[in-house]
Length: 466
Image: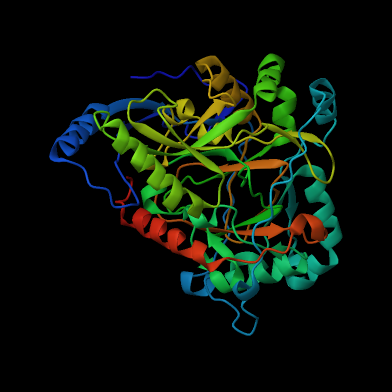
């Protein structure tokens, strides 16, 4: 049993009535390729899976700012899912997600902390609709486009609260088009983490799956070493019917500014590598079969995820575990437009140490971890510091139908709290509308769709509260 330290006094529990929750942790052997094993190997695997089962005491994470919920009437599912068929199908000439813009060399960390302290405190900045604003509808966003885009750059996120127009798929599209946002593919499209809510409107379903509603999604940018969306628009059509599901937002510049200086320098100097998937092979499998399996996965499966991955055995010390690990990257990056150094690292979401100590509902194949660039392990105290500083800067946003969070994906990290009941949120990803070089000219590759659909069907088959 793992016991987490008490919540820091500077943050607020998102679940005051449920300070701890118990979940069963277990491994799930899943291979998206047909592989034959002997009876002995399969028996060994079953014993291994049984040995992995254990009950962990998990603590619900905290947040620095927890605004109050407000009731706002939404539309029926038939109404909010309706697309405007008079508009063109955007999926026919959809842009690929742009390549990640790295500018991480020679950053003065002391100067970065000083400049972060001078940035606006509000993240997100709330823009609340008036009755007159809602009467204007599309015209409001056209008239205020420059103001909204400027505030997004200054604060990293804008919370459009109480607007009627974005309560539906068709209205959300009108809003984003009025703001001159340019749609692109999800950077993780081929992974299958999200399926389309409306493909013709390039709107993805958020992580609403019943099998993942008790999975806490930690802070992350929608980014890999290879691809990063410039902006995102997260919209609520239906909030969780039985509570929870707050959307989490945190300013990457503020996280950098408040992180313990020695740890920040250590991470910056040594860089990081992120493991995105585990495939457990029975430890007794002969070496030549393990290498053959590794080569098969490397050649047939890894390239379909559109990520630069290296297949490595036992990086976390678990015998027989094959891990798909991204290339070395800097945890700190300069913002492409402002040049402000920011915490540009998904460690709060991906660290196994943190996942094992909070609500987590993904199978073993989807478990992740973070290493130093040389594959060294972060210590528990270093993981705890990443948790502390990340959650200090979280605003746990209570989104109601029609609420939208516009996010600068290079500045701001996002996540999602656990929820109960049914929920429907969606997200649109956007490229660089004003910089052709950064945007690139890659178009959607349809061959990516197969893996996306397969993984989504697999996740849909999982029972609720998996």
